Amino acid sequence: MKTLAEVGEAVAKLRREEGITQETLAEASGTRQSYWSLFERGHIAEFGLRKLLAGLDLLGYEIILRPIAAAPTLEDLLAERRGGASS
Image 1 (cartoon, rainbow, N blue to C red):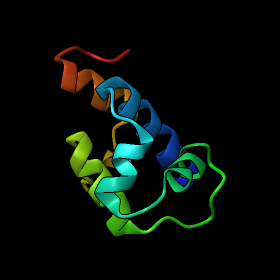
Image 2 (image 1 turned 180 degrees about the vertical axis):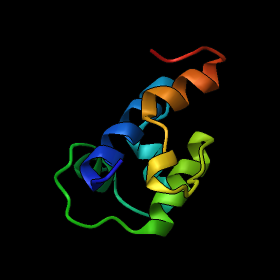
Image 3 (image 1 turned 45 degrees about the vertical axis):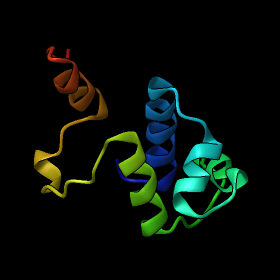
């Protein structure tokens, strides 16, 4: 992922899959629900790392830094989590 909008879209997908509301993420990160809504829809220019990490922790995810050439796609990561192969 190379843009904040892509990260927001991925977080929205994970949040829905886990059955967690934006309100719950807001409580965990000390923000408002509207902040998460803007982030997930790609309508926010900046998003605090502490807030993102708190939300990801609640979702059961973490950020792993890798060289760009070695970075898997979101589909690869989700397939790995589910124990399958990506196409």
